[in-house]
Image: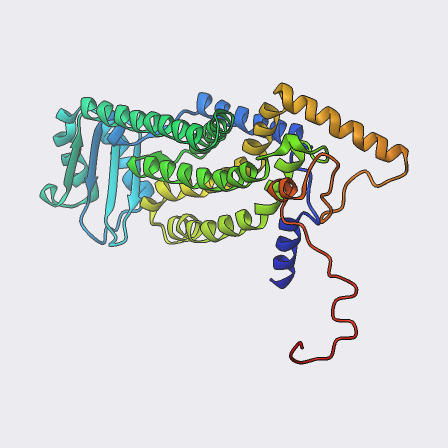
Length: 372
């Protein structure tokens, strides 16, 4: 842990770092490949929508049922003629969900299930959702997601600038597409819990992105007054400076969510946890990835398309070429930010505080104790 802490401190000071922005084409390519896979999965397999979105019926059996999940699933499909989703609850009862059926047929399906499962029809609870209600729920979910996106873009455009707002929006769409694509590929049911989990991870993804954007905003206040750093250089330092923090918060968040998904939903059979835990797990991982590898490099691309940033990059590269030709270090020292047209105050605003060397003659020949 001490080594990780030392690495984080060195990353924050800029003593070491990885060129995330310089390798952005690799990250863009990986993201495009993952996104295409998610879209193909969504197109080919589609989403397994719950009864809350497309209407249907949910039947709950008494406790401690002897029938297995596979048996109950076969009974339900034979009785309804539709695909059924069966979950075994913690008290031993079975929850049988049949989507897309006419609610008028629920009584006959319930009677057939009671016969096959060898239980009284009165002991089976039925919850019915009409198709019109399911459509309303689906529309409200999409409306909530759209309103969330609009508010996020407006806030980021005001707090930072429109380029950062656009980059954050792209990162959010990236996270949503991957999460929905994973749901299509694994076939998990999409429920209101899935929507809640999706909105939760979008907020987490934004938090991680805003942390990097805030650091980037502070370090680029007077960037055009110096000729040592391009916008991409400072963007890369902002990512490295918050990298360990992002990794730590992501790992800490993934541990309990992973326990819900793999232990609760997998080993213990609490299938009702799968809908929300999968969206949280995939979304948290995708959000951490997009904030580092997508959002900030995209901001650097958008900013360096500006004329003043192009001119700055040209001056920086020319100065570095001149330094290389004279045999001087191409990259400046971390604590040395002096420049002919860039004073110390501007340097501190861009690349952090400058370490002041101690005077060599301070204290020499002076006795210890009170000064006279």
